[in-house]
Structure formats: C-alpha cells, structure tokens
Amino acid sequence: SQVGAESDWRTANTESMKSTFSEENGYELIFDDAQQKQENQLTAIRNFIQQEVDYILLAPVTETGWDTVLQEAKDADIPVIIVDRMVDVSDDSLYTTWIGTDSLLEGRKAAEWLNAYTTAKGIDAKDVNIVDIQGTIGSTAQIGRSKGLEEGVDNYGWNLLAQQSGEFTQAKGQEVMESFLKSYDDIDVVICENDNEAFGAIDAIKAAGKTCGPEGDIIVVSFDSVKAAFESMIAGDLNATFECNPLHGPRVAEIIQKLEKGEEVEKIQYVDEAYFDTSMDLEEILKTRAY
Ligand code: GYE
Image (tube, rainbow, N blue to C red; front, side):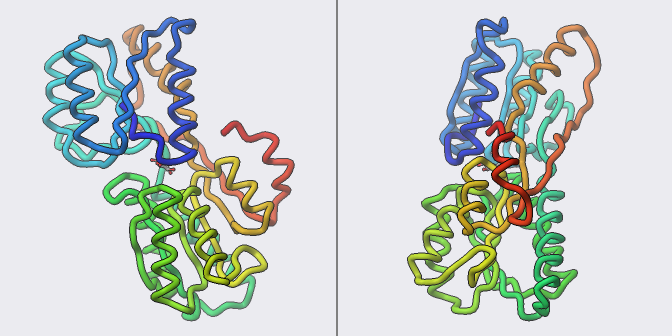
C-alpha cells in the first residue's frame, strides 16, 4: 500500500515497485493507492490479509498507529516489508525488514551545505533568516529533515523564523511560502522538505516580486533530487537538492528472493544518497538521472 501520488518522488517510487513486481517478473501485484490517508492503508492491509497474500509491502504515510494491524498480519503469518518511511511500533518483530533512506542524515547534510554556502558568502550566521516548509507531519522524512535543520540552527545560530507543513505537494508549498512572505520581509533561506514544495515556493517568491537561487534574494534548498529539480537548478531558481532515492523496487525484490530461500535479511537497509548544487555540471549529471 502506497501513500499516493503527491510528489514526483512518490510517482517514481510507485513506478519502481510496479515495474519490479510485474507478471513477467513472476509476481502478482495488488497495488493500493491510499491517497496519503492512514485509514486507507489500514483497510488495504486488512484486505491483503483476507486475500492471504504472501508478502505485504507498506510505505507508511506516518510513523504511528500500526501496531494493531501489523499484529494481525503477523498472526496471519504474512511477512511485512516497510518501504521508504518508518513505522514506530512497540515490537519490531511486527515487520520483517525496512528499506529506505536516512532522512536525518539528509537533513544534517543540508544544514552542513547551508553553513558552508553562507560562510563562503561572508554572511554572519546571526543574519541568516530561515523558513522551513515541512513535509507531511509525522512522516519519517519530515521528522528527520526537520531535526537535521533544527540541529543546524542550534549549532550555527541561524534564525528559524517559522516552520509549517507543505504536505510534500507543490500547491501547498506555494501556499505556505505565500503566507511566509506576507509575514516576513527578510527571509534569506527557505528549506523545502521535498522538491515539489520547492517548485511551489519558487512560484510564490517570483509572484511576490522577489528573486531566488544563486543570484537571487532567497536561497532555496530541497530534498529528493528528481529530474525537475535539476531543471530548476539549471534555470537558476533552486540552489541545492539532497537526494532521496525512490527506486526501492529491485532492493525489495532482492529481499523477497532471500526470504523465499529462508535466508536472513538485515532489519534496517539504508540506500546511499548524494546531493547536487549549482556548482556542479548539472546538465551532464541530469543525463544520468533515472527519476
Ligand atoms: O521526500 C517526498 C515524498 O517519504 C522520502 O515522500 C519520502 C518522501 C519524499 O512525498 O517527495
């Protein structure tokens, strides 16, 4: 059961799962789009249990509220593989393994990048005014990315003016940035907890008659590194994006193949990630991007 198609990232993640678990690859996939609602995911999981599936893959919209339904899957002897975001459960035997990205590390990398960038420009940390367009509140990606930024604020002494959820969507990201721009006339940095929020924030900045990017008034930093983020950096709007790899399909298939053979699998499996900014040869890198 997937979160829904709220972002380019999510679309790529879903495509990776669907193309991996295809009939020609020997799988029968029952796909559920929960449209970012936990209650839809709970219903889907119960349906999967009723259909006596062999494995349940869950991309949990937020971290809490999974113990009961995962216990039902365990009682039905159906292994559950958690993909992308994490579940916060009392007993980690309620899921077989988790494959995803280290959102806290992503947030910390972004804070380090911002410190290096502002220092190189000779901007004193106490003059750096930041707004944070958060992801879906309670999701692992939001929790980690917000925490990484907040640690940077504590470490470097930046001013964190405001934080508000843009729900990982472009429309909400634009709306939140519009309200931030009405409240503050001295924003130096906007941290967007995914690329789609950044695309919305950039539209809001331009509509307010301001500029952004390497030559602009406001530094824009985001997460995911989808192709459109490369295009935005090349256009001079986005400063940097921190990669969050969505292509989990093959990794999950590898895990299932091991489980089918009765082999042990690691409980936690992070995927490797980079970052990209306008100091790099982005036209060249874009040619290599798979999502
Ligand atoms: O960053 C965002 C998607 O959970 C890491 O969810 C994922 C996040 C990703 O909506 O674009």
